[in-house]
Amino acid sequence: MTSPICVTGGSGYIASWIIQYLLADGHTVHATVRDPSKAKSVAHLEAIAAREKGTLKLFKADLLDIGSFDAAMAGCEVVMHTASPFVLEGFSDAHEALVRPAVEGTRNVLDAVNRTESVKRVVLTSSVASVFGDNVDLQQVPGGVLTEANWNTTSSVDHNPYQYSKVAAEREAWDMHAVQNRWDLVTINPGMVYGPSLTTGSQSASIDTLISMGDGRLRTGVPDLSYGVVDVRDVAKAHILAAFKSDAEGRHLLVAKTLTMIEIAKTLRAHFGKAYPFPKAVVPKALVWTFGPMMGPVTRTFISKNVGHPLAFDNQRSLALGVEYTPVEQTFIEHFQQVLDDGQLKKRA
Ligand code: NAP
Image 1 (cartoon, rainbow, N blue to C red):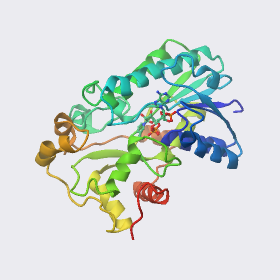
Image 2: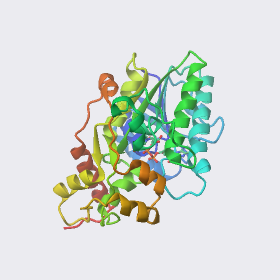
Image 3: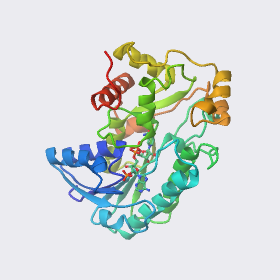
C-alpha cells in the first residue's frame, strides 16, 4: 500500500507503537493530535520518524470538532481510530469527560470517513469493555468464557462510565458501517494493555495502574481482582494486521492471559526484588467493600460485582488474525523497567 495511513490520537500509548511499526515499514502516517505544538505529545513521534524510513505528518484534530479530521484523512485508504479518553478518575462529569468524546468523536471521525472517497477500511480501537461490563456478567455467559459475540449491556454513564463509553462508541461505529458499503470495519478489543511506553506524556490509565504497583499506593494489599492482559506491542501489531489482511473482518478480543493483581505483583517482585513496595497480600473483599471507596475511584457496586469474580476470554479470533502473544511476565518486567529508566518511578537499590 502506498497511500498514507491515518491514525487518530497519535500521541497515545497504543497509537505511538502503531506509528512506530508503520514508520519502520516505510509507510506515510497522518497522525492526529489535539495540539501538534505540544512537545510532550509529539516529540517522541518526531524522534521515531527521524530514525525510521517512513514519513510522519502531524494534523490537529479534536474528537469534538466537527470536520477536524478531514485534512488528515485525505488520500488515505486506511483509518485507525484510536483516540478516546482512557481515564478512570479526575473528572466530575463522566458524560463530558468520557462518553461524549468517545461517541461523538467516533461519529465525527466516521463522518469524515464517509466524506473521504479514498478510505476502504477503518480499524477501531475498541476494548473488552465493549464485550462485558462487570466480571459478574460472566455468570450469564454460556460456558463462562467471553467471545466476540458478547456485548456489554450492564454499564451506564453512572456505573462504569469508561466501559460504557467504549461500548457506546463501538455500537455507533457498527451502526454507521451498516448503512454504507465503501469501507470495512475491523475492531480490536484489547484487555488491559501493559508493556513499555514510547511516551511519558500519555494519560492512559494503563500506565498509572502499573506505576501504582511499585510506588507504595498498594503497599497494604490488593483486592482479588482479575484482568485480561495484553502487551501494547501485540495490540499495535494487531491493528496493522487488521488494516492489511484483506479478509480481516469483525471484532477481535485481544487477551494474552487473565491474571489477578497479586499475580502481577508477584511477577514484578520476583524480578525487581524487595526494594520496591509491591503489594504482598490480598485484602479480604469485606475490607475492600468497607474502605475501597475512600481510597480510590471505585464504588461499592463495582466492588460487589467484580472483586472475587473470575474472568475468562476466548482469543481464537485474534490468533486467526495472526497475533502472536508476548508472555505477560515479559510485558510487566519490560514495562516496569521502562518506568524506572524514564524516571517515572525512582530506582531503588
Ligand atoms: P492514551 O495514551 O491516553 O491515548 C488516548 C489518546 O486519545 C490520546 O492520544 C489523546 O490525544 C486522544 N484524545 C483524548 N481525548 C481526545 C479528544 N477530545 N480529541 C482528540 N483526541 C483525544 O490511552 P491508550 O491507552 O493509548 O488508549 C488508546 C485507545 O485504546 C483508547 O480508545 C482506549 O479506550 C483503548 N484501549 C486502551 C486500553 C488500555 O489498557 N490502555 C485497553 C483497551 C482499549 P491528545 O494527546 O491529542 O490529547
